[in-house]
Image 1 (cartoon, helix red, strand yellow):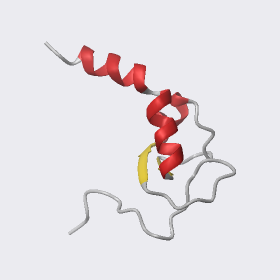
Image 2 (cartoon, rainbow, N blue to C red):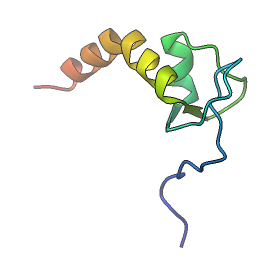
Image 3 (cartoon, rainbow, N blue to C red):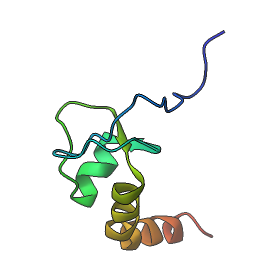
Image 4 (cartoon, one colour):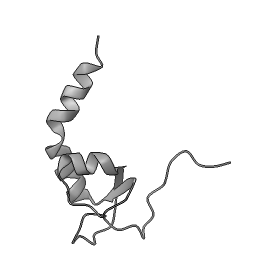
Length: 73
């Protein structure tokens, strides 16, 4: 049976241009680009190291808050 998610492997590197740190998290490629991260082209899932994931969270905070408010009723 196929797995529902892609597990991060120890060999996965961060997909931000110029970074070779070990990846710890993954997000959608579209979300990474919307946040302004300079990632490798053509990736559906982007692997991020701890530092770049923290940067992503900081850059996308307002958008994520607005998105969550739009779903509340």
